[in-house]
Image (cartoon, rainbow, N blue to C red):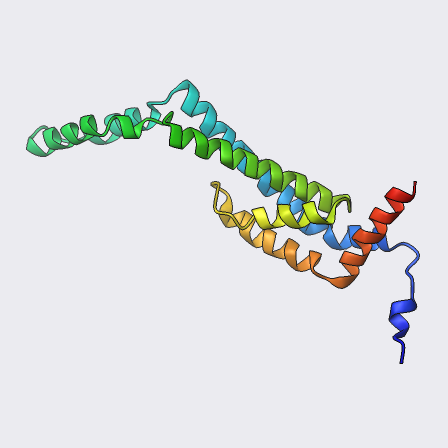
Length: 170
């Protein structure tokens, strides 16, 4: 027996899909922008003042300690680890660049979701929210989960495909 719902065509499924994915898309856009802000700031600090962590530790930890053997030991430890505390190490710089790229991919995917553009990019952007790459991962993870759940709905998938067909028909 044929399913009546399969033959039923909604007059404007794209508008319905836009409404259904608007909230997770906006939340992903906000978390991607926050991620880009954090990563961009860290990259800028790493380039302009690579000794920021070392300076902070020296000022707030070592200088605040009373004089004595313990202070001297900690100063020696800091001196021996000075290079590893620099923010402009190749590992740190590559991490900041990777988090920037991940934030851009998440932002692009969220925008594709909001505009009912590319379904694949919308899913990829949502999945990038699961990666613990930035300071706002605690926000991005639940928003990404919310987006994936919305994107998995069959009517949303059909709406994305219909919107794609309509764009290519023009």
